Amino acid sequence: MENNQFILLILCLVAVVFSTLMVFFRNPLSVALSLLMVLLASGGIYGLMGEHMVAAIQLVVYAGAIMVLFIFAIMLLNMKEEEHEKNNTPTIFMGVLAGLMILLGVGAFFIEADKNFMAPQAGPFTSNLMEQLGGNTKVLAHALFSQGFIPFEAISLALLVAIVGAVVLAKRKFDQ
Amino acid sequence: MISSTLLLQLTSLYLFIMGLVLIFLRRNTLVILLGIELLLNSANLLLVTYSKMHHVLDGQLQVFFVITIAAAESAIGLSIVVNLFRNFGSVKTSQTKTLLG
Image (cartoon, rainbow over all chains, first blue to last red; front, side, top):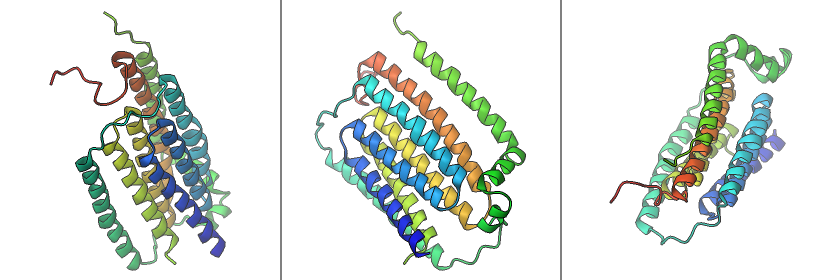
């Protein structure tokens, strides 16, 4: 569909532009807000592709909890703009060169793989079938609690460990 | 124009490289943590694209777990950053050191 392709292009462009801006900003708060824009654009891309549950989880957890936590930390530590350290030109050059090499190498691989792309025959979950079965959330929830049951329990254990660890780290005193 | 799956793969690659460049070149610990979040988000985008391309559900399931683990890891990382600030007085990577030399 022509409309879908156009909106997808806009969202991808927003994500690309704001991620490039993230590298150039000096203020940590601006970097965090640019990351928030990238996460919102990613959530829009997920919703456009028909994965509604992943889009909702991304908006609620990633853009709504993690970024708020980051902004709390920035405001708590009262981070202003970084003082202008002298521009280490060889380091910047090597960083840009490494990024360019990865971009060209893996990008060429993606373009080449897309040229010889054969029609996929694995997997039954086309969007029509998912709509018949009751929507993306229902199908994903069924898969989560039947096929991904052990990782689900392991994730709850990992979250418990994270909560205990965060409390311990915030309480420790170092003055002895 | 180019197909939508190729556009999404290239976008995910570009976001990954921007996250890597943030980790390499910035000297503020909290900005390095933001770069790690960008890396994880780009991997999520790629997983979801492939899951849609091959009409399976495994990619979306994996994204569910990755987002949860990213939340837990960023909470712990921020506690560590607050502790760094408490001990050394700043979060720049050039000043959080106790080894001499």
